[in-house]
Amino acid sequence: MSPPILPALEDELGDVLEKAMRRARLTEEALAVRCGVAAARIRDAVDYRSDLCGDELRRLAAALGLNEVGLCALGAGRYPLPEIGALPFCIRPLRMPHGIGVANAYLVGPCGADHAVLFDTGAGMRALAEVWPADIQKLDAVFLTHVEAEHAGGLCEVVARFNVTAAFVPGGAVAPCGMPLGEAEQREFGKIKVTAFATPGHAAAHNCYLVTVPSTPAATGVLISGDLLFAGSVGGAHFSQEQLQANLRRMLGAVPPGTVIAPGHGPLTTVENELRFNPFAV
Ligand SMILES: [Fe+2]
Image 1 (tube, protein in one colour):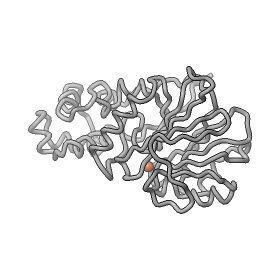
Image 2 (cartoon, helix red, strand yellow):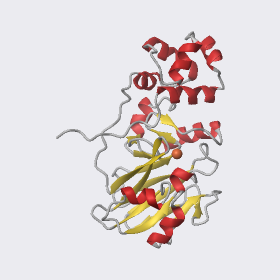
Image 3 (cartoon, helix red, strand yellow):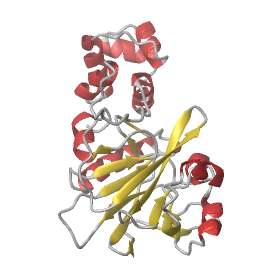
């Protein structure tokens, strides 16, 4: 049997370099002086025309404080992704085209059941309907990671369509159909427990959610990471660079290494994989 086709990474080398330069508050010229790689070659890489060699990537990683192995893997188009093992529930990514990219929502629930918990709602009910599995008829709850059009556009429609009484948004978010949920607050739905972590950085109001099954504490959990963290990259620090970086480190240390990460864009990964390779996780 051929292996499943994985969705593309959210960020390429050029995106990662651009985000890292913004984090370090360095222009291409200043970075060139610092690492000895010509500014024109850095600019080409940022513009997706990279032919940087391994030595140049290593010098860029050192100058920008990035994970060298991960940056070189991205540069070679071979960022490693882990195999996703058994989970104590079923998670179904709902991948929806948005603009030039793809935004993810997730359904998490007992395997084979007709109900689940929905994390993020895509751009709207129409986008969700295109990818909605026919067997999911009821929603136990909806959780938003942050209120941006590609992740939260359908919240009120979803609440109305499924008659949802438990819809949660990060504390401080402006969302008419959701109740605020802050740091360490928990909700349980059958065997599934959802724990909220307030993780501002990409947005002022942003939550990650850890999904676990308390009755099987050794089983792998899932971290719904929104736009804090992607496989091989991080979200844009539109609210606070410092808080995004601090929350990235905090979350990668707060959950077991085997925890599966389900990001707002791109493929599934694990905490262990991102601790080893994510350019920003240093
Ligand atoms: Fe996003």
